[in-house]
Image 1 (tube, rainbow, N blue to C red):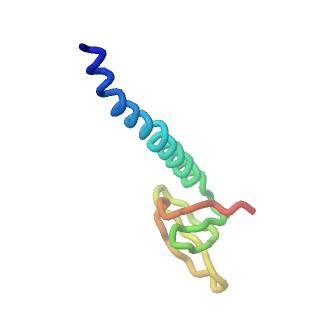
Image 2 (image 1 turned 180 degrees about the vertical axis):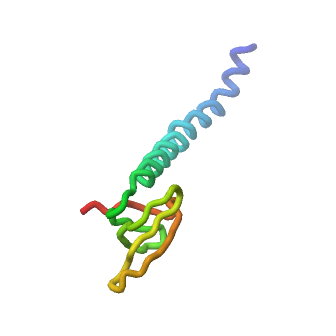
Length: 89
């Protein structure tokens, strides 16, 4: 009887394992990589924001940074979570 009950829950257990190893675990790994990239930003790096703005970092604070963008060197302050990627030269 206990084996039959286990077999009843086996598909549910398989679905839970699939979601963990197939979806949740890779997403957490990607989030850690993105967080590490955002923490490694330093003055002089070129970045792309989530909104599509490209600029050069001129000031880095704990959770914010300032970038220069455009020909007139306009300065924009943004939170680190607003960085999409670092542009490699």
